[in-house]
Length: 222
Image 1 (spheres, rainbow, N blue to C red):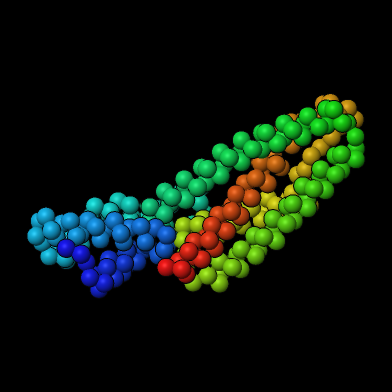
Image 2 (cartoon, rainbow, N blue to C red; image 1 turned 30 degrees about the vertical axis):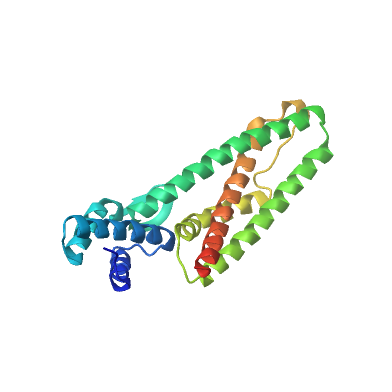
């Protein structure tokens, strides 16, 4: 038995009442729960209301309010936290891996080209990219504020985005940058790894914000 539009609206409204106002996850759950209800009504020959309660009881654990140390937020449904944590884990792992590779390349450059001009050029580049990152974060915050939709992407970007502004300001002002010594062959690897990794983390968070805009564009075509 296929659900009516009114019954699907009831599923949607029930999800919203459970705090699930994030459209990307909500669209997925509406499909899953509607399918479960249809199967229950066909196999067990029960009414919609009973099938609705049974279906939501199966998802109760994922809809319980939850928080995480890695995300600055109030309680939201656990399914939102789980998807956000998956993105955070990906961001940190990729940023650290790319940071090691890039810091290794910078260290290699200094060992074979121990010139003050190169150090200055790299630090100027780091500060310029950081300043651009700050501008993009401000732009995305404004675009997400204007957005008529919410998603896991906008949730994570809005909650952890301000941390990226702080780190980018430190990089743009030269508080953390590449450091050289009188003998550039003694260049410290960690002095390159830290700012580069922070820069990659901020870049990946920017991508999360742009993912919301792409998701919103996709919704507009539905």
